[in-house]
Image (cartoon, rainbow over all chains, first blue to last red; front, side):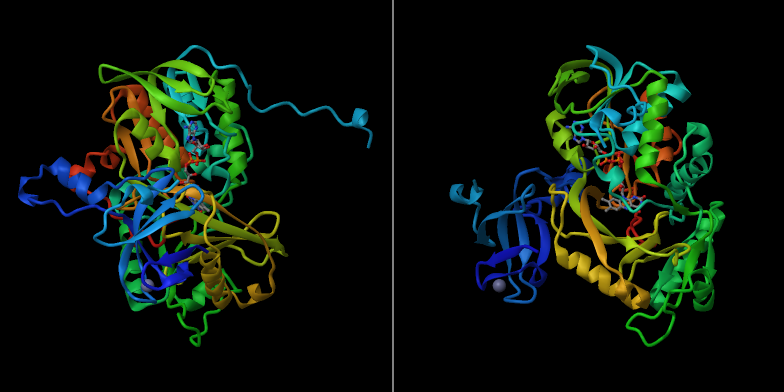
Length: 95
Length: 406
Ligand SMILES: Cc1cc2nc3c(=O)[nH]c(=O)nc-3n(C[C@H](O)[C@H](O)[C@H](O)COP(=O)(O)OP(=O)(O)OC[C@H]3O[C@@H](n4cnc5c(N)ncnc54)[C@H](O)[C@@H]3O)c2cc1C
Ligand SMILES: [Zn+2]
């Protein structure tokens, strides 16, 4: 089981959290301007890297807040956590 | 025993040639799908100048990690067509390959535990029948007759309210399936090349002309991806995206037991599925781990969750000992249906997104994919499964619809 360091509550077991997939996927600024191809990308396509991945977690059984983490999808090691609304800085890009 | 007295090494089932400089078709990945595709290209289309490139060893990916459930009772027409075609090929596979794959049509029970489950299940039975797929609704007493060790009492958290039963469904020995296809493909002239990782693509004016590998450049008339959980990594190298997410999926076996479990039982609601292997191990599968992962392992609480469901349904299992757990990397799409067809790069084809349920599809998918590669046109069976469905919106939503994902 992963131990995930919630920015509000500290390290807690994975079973307290829900997974939210790729972080920083913004709702399209002008949805009407999107082609079908662009809609498909927004709705159905997400990055799927083998390596560092910026992703969202929600601390459902704790503070109930969403936040972001950078996790290596090969080793599952988490190298950074940061609050929603913060951008992934250079130091949070992980090793 | 003295080493000199060891018996002679048995004959290899397939040749292990050095890669040639060029092939008509290069298939990336020697799991079930890659090997079956090579076999059908050679046997049905006479295309034998084919290489299957595998970064590790044959069936070292999901192919020999799955729980081997074979069935065709999917809800939607497109799914029923390709899985039922596959099941028909399974029914003749040992004869066709001249090789034992221990295909055993012991039936699959999909249990219903809620009123909604019951409604969905009955609807699926009717849809299956319209599509020529054998299916019946069975009440709790009939469930008990089919699998006497199930607890059908109403004093458990999610009592069994009935189930669907597909008598022609069953299991097979996954590694033997891979070997059977590899052997026949090799006999027909296909080069199976292990320890050969594809690291890039040679693309000239929008058309693929070869692959870069850990063993040098190999030219190719056509390139067909069969890399399951690694498809995104490869498509990224070729400059396009696929709508999949790679997740760990775990399974486990118990020690050997007397044969006590005559069929295959799947439960979507409490999430466990169980069969008993030919030797006697209980084989059980879990749901996917929630996070993306390429580690071929998942979190233990997923196994615990699944065991608590198993023990409630099968009280006898509480005494069984866990022998081994493992994980694979499954390629999941948003509509829980596979992707098969042409890619944005000319001469390059994609077959991925089989997620947690592509073992049963090995013969059918190999058959349809070989047609797609040979003719540069989808087969009737995979026309609906192209990448274009995510743009048109014509999704094939098997999430929940198909009883359980595997
Ligand atoms: C635990 C578990 C249980 C499952 N249970 C069932 C079930 O009961 N029924 C069912 O129908 N399905 C089941 N599945 C799903 C099924 O196993 C898969 O859908 C199917 O095996 C995928 O196709 P494949 O065999 O070709 O994949 P794989 O065997 O994963 O083949 C892909 C191959 O590509 C190779 N590869 C990757 N990258 C490269 C590269 N760059 N160069 C060269 N080679 C590369 C890999 O090494 C691998 O060998 C299960 C899966 C798992 C993990
Ligand atoms: Zn918290």
